Amino acid sequence: MEEKKYVNGLVIKERTFDNGGTQLKASIAVKDLVEQLKQEDDNGWVNIVISKRKEPSDKGVTHYAYIDPWKPTPKAVGVSGNKDTMMNGDADDLPF
Image (cartoon, rainbow, N blue to C red):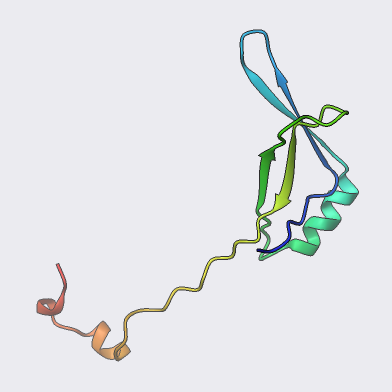
């Protein structure tokens, strides 16, 4: 399993209200976060996972984030066969 790449410059704290509602507050060190995101950029996108810590830190940090390493596998284009056959096939050849 690949080692987690934790997101730098992102601090997440959960706040619980008297009515039971919750809110996540994120503090961002823009320079650090942007620099890391540029390094991880994949066609303009970076996927991150946000997970809840087992115990809040001494500074109240309740969540952490890391780069999601999953990448989709390329799909095969079409089915095996001649392109002309697929484009000019008879209506009887349709599977529905």
